[in-house]
Amino acid sequence: MSGWPIVTWLGDSALLLPCAALIALWLLVPRATRPQGWMWVLCFGATGLLVALTKLLFLGWGMGIAALDFTGISGHTALSTCFWPVALWLMGSRGTHRLRVALAMAGWLLGALIGFSRVSLDAHSVSEITAGFLLGGAASVIFLVRQRRWPHPRIHAQAVLATLLAPLLVVEPGWRAPTHDFVAWLAVELAQHDRAYARADLQQGTRPAPRRL
Image 1 (cartoon, rainbow, N blue to C red):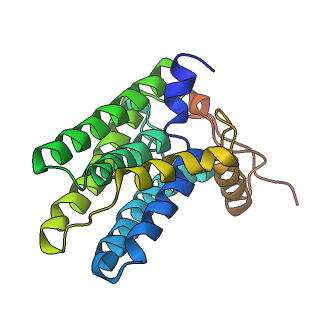
Image 2 (cartoon, rainbow, N blue to C red):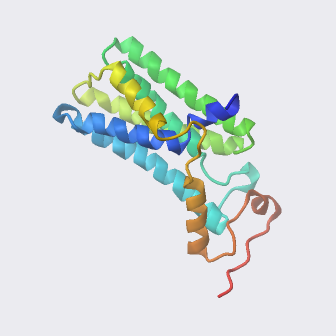
């Protein structure tokens, strides 16, 4: 792997889903940080659900915006912009407030870079990347702002780093999670078409044929 494929893989579900689950575990097990754990599950889960919903509506029923070349929120951008600011913030949880803010900002910059990689690889349009960045950014901001109400988590940086590296024991770097394929299959089954909608359908005004019984 080299170049943009490496960057884009940092936002793939194959990496982020197990990492997000492990962070939830770190926060849910101690009683003192359990509220943060549930807030994290809510923020990350809602982000993934909204991404899947927009993709499902387009792939199954063609609900997009042709003028913006919008076929659904970029999952890589949304999940990474939700995940990385929080993960890096937790990595600096034993440091100063200034360090934590700097790490969170680095996470948002990484999310923006991952979004740019999706455009560079011709996987998404600018509108889809922008929507993903706004959604994921809002979720991570909500999580971080809410920390003022609860005891501050003090997790060792090594523990967070281990959480980020653990998926590499079972997932080969560059392997793509089949989440998009699953959503496309589900959309076709629900809409009863012979195939999923494609970007070309949105641009050309075409549509899949109804499935023959």
